[in-house]
Length: 162
Image 1 (cartoon, rainbow, N blue to C red):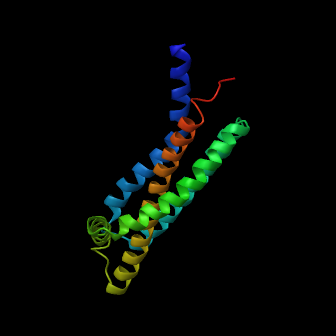
Image 2 (image 1 turned 60 degrees about the vertical axis):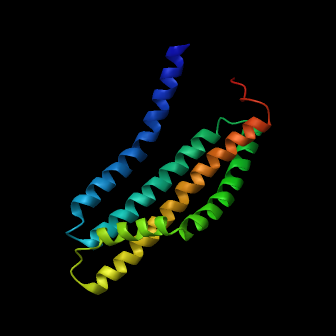
């Protein structure tokens, strides 16, 4: 029994690993290339974002194939509530000075060595938008997990394994 659960955890970790590898390598490359070329950093940001979103959609479709009606209803509940709650919480977070100051400082550090002020301001705005959108997605993900836990607690336990 323990061996099967370890195999299942290993398979899930293997499925999620491309996203983790992409994000970790993106931040490593971003720190390494920061002083060089801002255009390349923006293109790399777009490519990594598109990859993570596309692979996440692939994983969601793959998991949904094996779901029954109750599990699909649970997913719908978690998605709807998570998106709504996450958007609201993100708006509240962006109103707090420590959060906005951290995002602004991170953007300023990433664009500090741009050769031209016009390019620096444009890059800073684009990176700020990307960091804000990333914050939104992360908060929505956490809210979807919380909503899923709420659904399972209200509906009486864990789903049956077939």
